[in-house]
Amino acid sequence: MTAHYVHRQRVRLARTDAGGVVFFVEPLVMAHEAYEALLDDIGVSARSVIEAGCGIPIVDARVSLRAPLKVGDDVDIALAVTRLGGKSFTIQATLRRGDEVVGEATTTHVFIERGQSAPLPDALRAGLAPYVTTVSP
Image 1 (tube, rainbow, N blue to C red):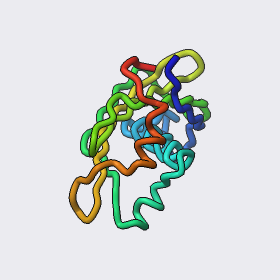
Image 2 (image 1 turned 60 degrees about the vertical axis):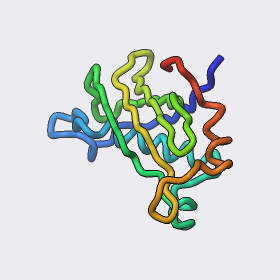
Image 3 (image 1 turned 135 degrees about the vertical axis):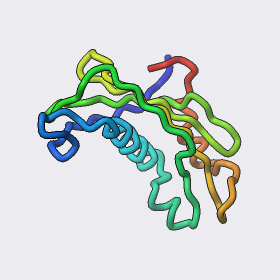
Image 4 (image 1 turned 45 degrees about the horizontal axis):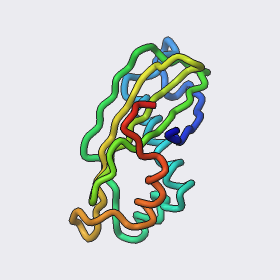
């Protein structure tokens, strides 16, 4: 059985339009916040990466929405690593409201050191490894 990292968020008013529906880009932002929580939990925080003079920028991002999210909705964001390469990796986020899949977001990240792509650090690779899957969550 493949493990997924799950992060819960509540849709806040600031993420919505006047009708209380999330702006189109917000599911991608929510997925990125879940990814940052995953980094914290595996001991490779975004802050520690930046303080080391490195980065893990997104080089490709896609989002697909199936249903609107509204203010007050609790959203479970399940993350899976769909590709773990030598210098980059891809994360798929599935956003659920209860049992309903309301969207997906996919981001590809490249590890950067001294302004150049570089091999993924061992700690990052080891932390992501339990979430590697080829099956959508």
